[in-house]
Image (cartoon, rainbow, N blue to C red):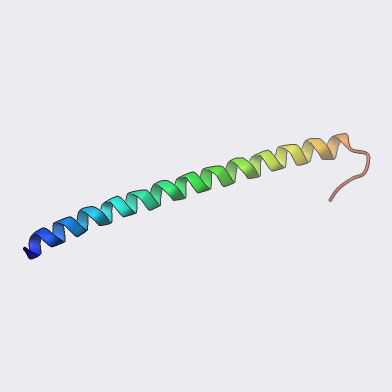
Length: 54
């Protein structure tokens, strides 16, 4: 009984850890893509605009 509970909770822990890992990867990927897109658009706008934005 105790061993079965440990195995069940261990599998649930692995699933939860995998979900957290997957969600963190997705969040980091979206953040990096947004940051890269922001840098590219900002540089393009900075080069094309007459008024320089810091």
